[in-house]
Image (cartoon, rainbow, N blue to C red; front, side, top):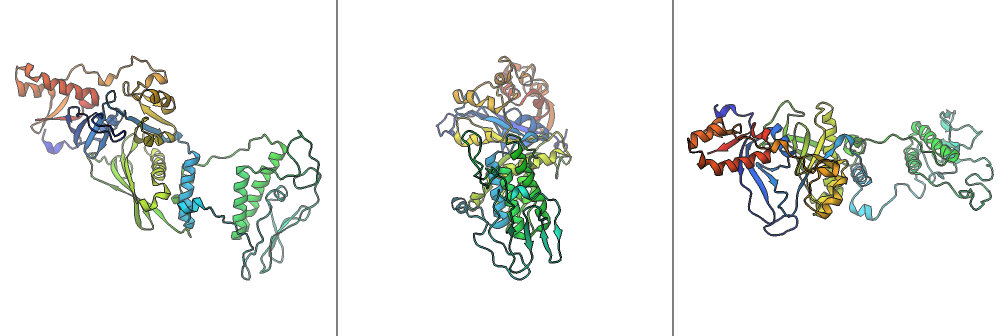
Amino acid sequence: MPLETMDQYSIVEYFDESEGYKCGYCKSKTTSYSQGMWAHSLNVEDYQALIDRGWRRSGCYCYKPTMNKTCCPLYTLRCDTQKFNLTKSKKKVAKRMRQFLVSGGGSRNDEENPTTSEPKDPIPCGAGELSFKPPMPPCKSLSILNHACYRTNANNSIKIPLSEPSINLSKTSNSSIEIKEEPGQPGQPGQPGTSVPGSGPDPNKPLCKKAKAARAERKRDKLIKEGNLKLISSVFQEINKFINLKRINPDVKTESVAKSLDDFLPHIDLPIDAKHSLEWTRFLVDSPLNNNTEGPLKGYGSYHNQYWLDGKLVAVGVLDILPSCISSVYLYYDPDYGFLSFGVYSALSEISLVRRLTRTHPCLTHYYMGYYIQSCPKMRYKSAYKPSYLLCPESYEWVPIEKCEATLQESPYSRLNVLNGGSPDAQDEDGTVTSLDKVHCLYRRSITTYARYKSHKYGESNGKAESEDNHVREYVQLVGRSCAERMLLYRQ
């Protein structure tokens, strides 16, 4: 077959195991071992199968650690994006980015010296604007702001009926928020009462704030400050419902709708008056991966995921978009923006991208983060993206990382499938070599089988091919029989 018609094939040149070299993780000399091959071209389906057997690529060079020999075993790790859970630390990174984009704050200095957005003194205002005193007491007035509708009188002020303590927002130059409280019963928060030891919370003290109520109060104060009167009613209802429910039954758990990952990514829904803008652009780039136009975006292949902040390129992530996953190759960013934690933020953005692509390509569900190295503290951060799974180096089964960490702490190289109930005798069926005759080769610009190649090169003297047989057998065991019969092994 002419070489011009071979675009759909993977063409690789396999090398023998490299001699021991210096480890980039533990810095030991001549203790790191791996096998490698040069990919002249690589089909995306073939590369998907290779990374599911522990291979990774760096440019055109593909490598696989010799797991039972190398000093720091490298386990392929993938995250199930459809079940991904945001941790508190990841939410903080997203919120810091949003704070920076919206208000220009959120630097390291801001974190060390936090400031409040609520003014301590009344804000001077001009005629026709709202003038406010310091924010309302959070607990005393919340339980009585339970009206869904507000009445507007002739003076353009919004009032709650006087049968309950009221809040009056009047649009005059000298106006202020007024809270009028009616006498309460003893034992109510803020009212005289008697505290009996062992009888529960002290009624003379305000109720403890729950996180949900505190968020609603901050939202209320922001709306009042902005003069957004239309939404204040719904916020008051939300706070009142929560507070009253907790008073009736302190142990009750209120229903809440968990925010999705996209809700925490600030660049998706920025206000018009945001101080900064963050944009993505994706460019299909040259790599050994053959572009398949049937895939998402511009097709399967390698992309540069660029992050532009106010028109300035501040970070670039290199991604491989494959039939079942997005594989993160590496990320580099401007160190001046290190306080924005682009390493974490880019991972969250790429996980979000996988989730969006799943809608049109249901098989594309996972996010591969490269290798996990238990013996290297700097690489353990990847386990924080849950749920994640490690690839067993013997059976090539995926095992939840939580089941692996303790075992890998004691023994850096381990058969992981037994930790998930698998058999200690399980074999890699795709790596079992029964015959080399069906291995496909590229020889003298033509596609042929290894059996025909040997016959042409060695004739009847098959004994001379023993060394080459061992070389090809090792290649089949590492890439798998299905890949070996699909890819073209370059032969001279």
